[in-house]
Image 1 (cartoon, rainbow, N blue to C red):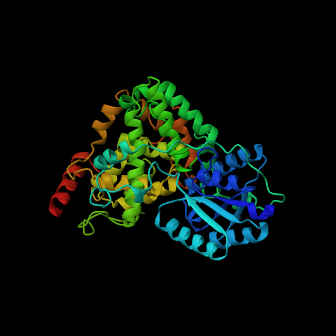
Image 2 (cartoon, helix red, strand yellow):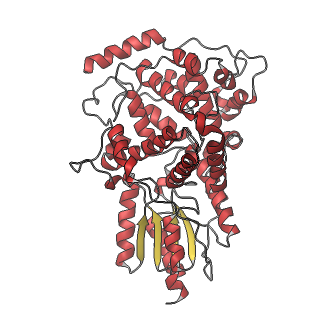
Image 3 (spheres, helix red, strand yellow):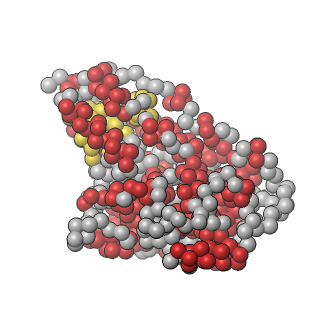
Amino acid sequence: MSETGTTSLWWIRRDLRLMDNAALSAAAARGPVIPVFVHDERSEALGAAPLWRLEQSLRALAADLEARGLRLVLRRGDALEVLRALVAETGAGAVHWGRLYDPASRRIDASVKAALRDEGVTAESHAGLLLHEPMTVKTKLGDYYKVFSPFWRAIEPLGVAPPLPVPERLTAPAAWPVSDDLADWSLSGAMRRGAAVLARHSSAGEAAAWGKMTLFVEERASSYKAARDMVATAGTSDLSDNLAYGEISPRSIWATGQAATGAGVRGLEPFLRQIGWRDFAHHLMYHTPHMLEDNWREGWDSFPWSEEAEDAKVQAWKYGRTGVDFVDAAMRELWVTGKMHNRARMVVASYLTKHMMVHWRVGERWFADQLIDFDPANNAMGWQWVAGSGPDAAPYFRVFNPDTQLQKFDPERRYFRRWIAEGQRDAPETALDFYEAIPKSAGLSPKAIRPQPIVGLKEGRERALAAYSARS
């Protein structure tokens, strides 16, 4: 067989890494590898912060590939048409990629696989996004799981396949196809001046991911259970964006956690359970894809939520001007870092959907635009869990009180001072970064006076409980 016949395209999606990459390993086993990222309808639809973060990940991967004698080929357009064109240009005999489980990806994958195989090209998708693929985890009756606890009990004893090493040999093709220039895509354009702020608070790439993993195991794991909810404490792994772009695999995280536990490190079980929660979100998205857009539970379509995304109170929520300290600090953390502490995510979601009585879709779409760790399954399930309309939902009577939550999880108010500049004589850089990140048109100033709550906590709780009780 000629070299071109043994050449494979490694079609990169949410697996921007070299270690534990089944698609890359399969391509490398055949012969020369051409890594390719296609900027198609799915990435075109990403929000401003996810697009910015994607650009950082692509740059990091391109550098890693270059160090091993390969190039990252960038093309824009319909995935099938781009892959067909590359097969024709390079004579590649195979295309390998990692599976995704959202409806759009499943549709595209099926069409790509069928068309390429009909044309005599080997087309194979591979596992690697999750610990266990959604179609492989079933109840005793052969159904999918609807509640996390039994799902976790089902997957915990299954074992996880060991991560694959980086292929020993990565061979370049005799000639490289033409690639787009990443700068020409302007993926950071929508972030405007906020891009420089995000860059100060995030790190992309496989090496950065492994650095965080090592730091977590060595310094934070033993205190994770107690520290993970303390919003001013660096008690988590901070891997959410690296995991979202596949710069580190869940199997690698699992294997590292198991090895550390075997070596005597304590406290990793609740952390690994969070990786299981991510699997559960994708499990539900695979089996009930309507959860991305619609209420997961029946009977919620008539609930009296507002969907006025441009309402003045919603705008105040987005810009951290609700007058509720915990909510405002968290929303500003999101503007500055592109992330938000998980405890804070629950509080801001509860305030929007319960105190403000705004539809979870409004918040879900805002997060989809603002989060550098955006994951469609996690985002939709998280919002619906808090709102009450989703799987494993918080009971309708669980209305988080932001003030008592802040007192419990930020008793010294360090988190509040870190992100809210108003009222501080010498506000920290993190709080001032907010004003650099937001559009100038917002007209906000660190010298402004803190607003009164747009919805009182007692008033909002009572209104929410009345509405939730009326539907039950």
